Amino acid sequence: MAIDEVEASPLAIAITEGHRRDPRHTEMILRESRRVVRMDRGVIISETYHGYICANAGIDASNIPGSDTICLLPVDPDASARGIRDSIRQRLGVDVAVLVSDTFGRPWRNGAVNVSIGVAGFNPVISYIGEFDPHGNELHTTTIAVADEIAATAELVTGKLLGVPVALVKGYPYEPMEDADSHAIVRDPDKDLFR
Image (cartoon, rainbow, N blue to C red):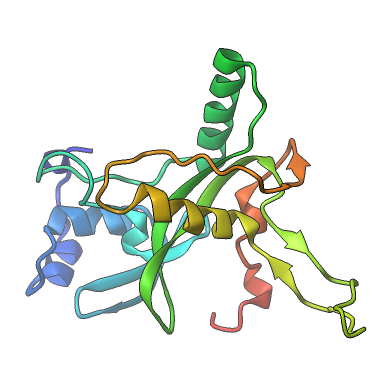
């Protein structure tokens, strides 16, 4: 999106004052946020309309051409993943699972990691609830966000600065799921201890 198409509100201008971000970028962060979780020192942590809690509503001004351009998250990342999956199936005749990822920071941890924001064709979360570990202990809460693990693994080969848009992950025995939905990864607000 061309930032020239955006008019910054007085609030976006005030928030941005003293920080390096363009007020129009801040305006788009506010527009793409369901709610602001926290703001401090020019950093805006918000909840997107998708339900993701991330910096700057997931809006990037890096790894895109031009200094007057910003990149928003897809309106429907799951639909984007389904579209890619359908195109691969039509063009190549193979059935694959697809995920769309973005780089997110993590609370209480330094360094960002790629996480899944859209999925198609596989279960993004594997549950071990009710199963037993090798010592006979029953698992009561353990679920693994395999879509996030795959996204983070893929970033190791795509790199942040390499311009590689796609990684092919082979050998993972994923659980096929036609109605896959990335919202399975987003914690239910009723179970979120930090709201």
